[in-house]
Image (cartoon, helix red, strand yellow):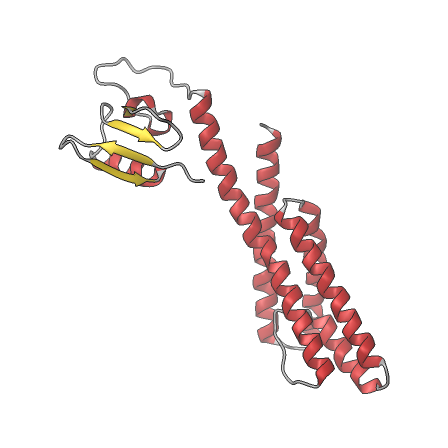
Length: 219
């Protein structure tokens, strides 16, 4: 849960709650001084703003100290950073679910004889659907089974990627990059644009995953 703040202004009224970025904006605007009373959502006591390390405000008349954040303040800031990185990890990892779901829809549509398809889905399963459909017999069933397996694999990558397993990002990106090459060979340019966007999103998720794991390891 995001840390929020309330202030007790000079007019005797309470303002807030606001997040840290908004509060820092109030500091820059002069609405919050070192002596302004603050209440942080993870505390039960009102304290002067100068007591909060994240605001870097010095008490009136104080000699500039060698600034050291208290363990509580440092831990809070670290938690906020880690939460933001986790959001980016889940944002990137969730693309595996989209690829899996839309690939599965494409396979089902091909099996039932429906037309069209989603460009974010896997190109390899669409190729197999077309090739095996022309073979007749049980080939359409085989194509559907392969489509389900491929969708299940990407959904699994999504589960582990969202849990900050970097290998899931890497393996999934490599496989999706090969799928992108098939999209190029098919000269499906709209599909190529979407594939490129997904790859960029996965890369950003991987980078956030590695940063979050490094931060967690460092304690």
